[in-house]
Image (cartoon, rainbow, N blue to C red; front, top):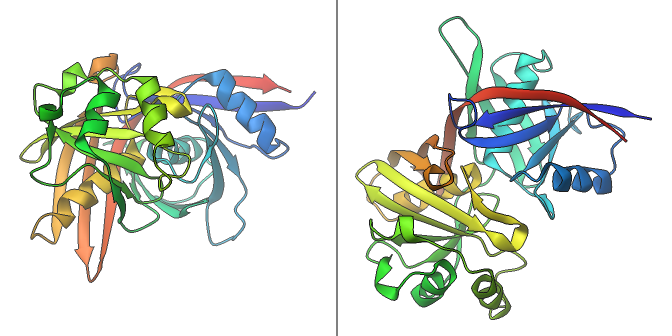
Length: 295
């Protein structure tokens, strides 16, 4: 029976059992898409990543990323975590990797410690910022068990934004973020009431104090009740905040996952060049498990 090796790492943390856990299959050749989905469902993590040879030899690898229910076009902690695992295993040369994902090329710059060891990475989101429809503040409140006044609209209304993976972004009052309690029925009703959201309705909420941000992300429809650290959402968050400023560059430190007992630390930046806004997300990784799947 075929055997497929995997490793797990905690991403966006320097402490084991913090951050966002990820399973990485370093050589997924021979696995079908259906098997990848089954393995992701079995691991029951926010995402599981499968590394394949690149379609273009100018790139480092092709990655397929699955959450519990579907394949994703792009995700942040799986991209950083996969690059970290590949580098430690000697499967990637140099400190600059190019990962092929359905949303485009994810550029990864490895980060190293004082002894030269790989400790994490920084990704550039594969697409510039794009924004979609606005969502009523009352919908956000209903989905998260809040009241209408908890949703802040002075910087921007709740809105869909993406750099490869769409989320609904909403700012909250500082005392509201700890009170979020997602309501799956309200999420489903919100998605069913719209014809402009596709099949995704995931809400990313945040509070901000200068360049310090505290955030939470809820995606119960796709099987992730709450995510400890969401790179593919923090990238467009940086872009969205830049869009609503007069600056050309911004940088923030984001804390996420604290309510879950998995504190995560992300460093995000956004830059405005011409008519496009691009963003990066960076953080550290910690190895946890190694094992094999026999299929």
